[in-house]
Image 1 (cartoon, rainbow, N blue to C red):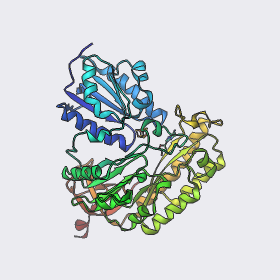
Image 2: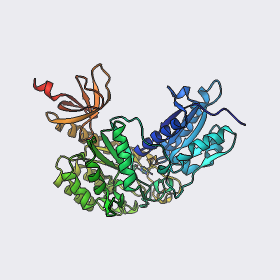
Image 3: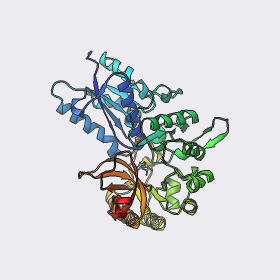
Image 4: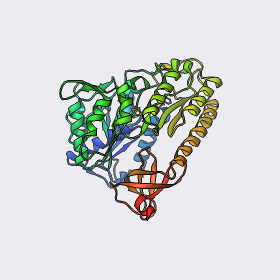
Length: 444
Ligand code: 5AD
Ligand code: SF4
């Protein structure tokens, strides 16, 4: 059945920051095709659900969303595209399970979205989950319109094969984008208004390439190059693997002024036995040594991480080792999850899957400790001065919200403009944000 080509769109992204980046690039691509961003999802003629497959709950969300879209559609259902990691993992099963879906497009194929939309409008099957050798980045339109803080994908995919994780299957093998392409995109982002760039990769610190002179470079070389970019004030990167934390990258934390004092370095668990079963290829001691070395060059660094509780075979003693590592490291921030068996991963079929109630209990205990540490970190910044990059309006008139160097959400009074980098004085701290006033006004 043919249908009119959509004139407006809405992209909804779930999951990680790379999905947010992909969502922004899909929006730019659709705009370049003459579609306009709809004012609300309800008004869109094309809805792109940019999905995440990392845990079961995340993956199931897409189906409830599709149900909701179909239910609220009165004058004809919008065209529905499922993009992202669920698209990659489930492919043709998606329209089987949810016939309302018109398009399925994987994370390495979304540059073909305009063709897929045309195919769907012509009543043809529109599915593309290829992982082509040629890069989507070569054909996507140039970056435009940008907030003060931007993402830039520099590396994609994963070769590490942690036994719990779908990423090697959904995002493919580790690939680093070329130096020139990254530097050009960074310049375009700055020209479009970005003052902060977060370099993204599933294993971002595994980035490798060659600079303009043909010299081999790692992520630290790239960071040093971006440090010279006029108009760029802040550089961040996420997410890192302990095994790829090079000496050069650690050193960069000590001497690259624009590199912000925040390190997301997931350890996942605090028991060597569990780390081995996870195929993490590092142990607790080597992780702790890394943290120590980074702190030696950058004592105020905010350490962040990811944790999984209830991995198959995890005993109470193993879990207590995780708590002990958390206590030793002191986190400014962390994500923690219950283990979720993912189809096709080795851990899903391991013996000794953990009882859900035990997982709940462990997650609660871990989160209580992490929340306490996060609050403690925030409280310790009270009375300090720091720069805040203002990103958006706050709840009350005159309030703005931005980020501190340590990635805390900062509520700033006195109405600085969005995009301003202001020096503030931190006056109070809650568990999830801190409050500040503009420093000169505080002194006056
Ligand atoms: N179950 C629970 N958490 C997971 N993660 C990855 N795979 C799983 C899974 N199967 C977590 C890890 C990773 C973060 C992005 O998600 O902690 O670092
Ligand atoms: Fe989710 Fe991982 Fe895909 Fe990001 S890469 S969207 S976290 S499954």
